[in-house]
Length: 148
Image (cartoon, rainbow, N blue to C red):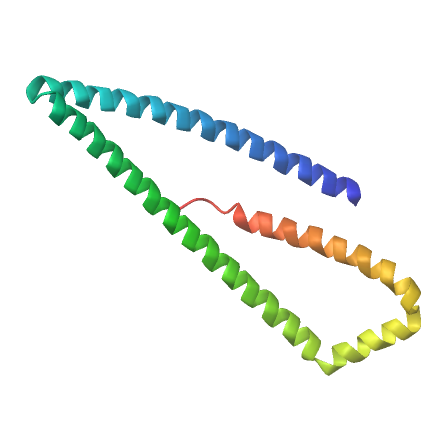
């Protein structure tokens, strides 16, 4: 069981590394392309209108690119906050329904009496770790949805 977790972690780390390197290569190519396009626009405006207008045109191009990037950042930040808020609401409602159920509380008390509190603490710790691993795997698989 632990080997499966390790294999899943290795696979996900390898996939993340490959995707990161591809994204870095694409970003570098986009940077070089943008630099050449800006240079071409600068030379065109310099030849037709003069140096001041060429510099202002370059500044305007970079300003527009910066505004687009800032807008994308703000949209992504809002999406992440909305997802976190939804996840918190879902977790809170699930925990409240489980703890408010009298049958669940009675079963929990019977388990504590049967097993004993001293033996139950390590079992709960291991169960909590396993639940955390499973929740992170489920969360990671839902976050790897195709990009829109």
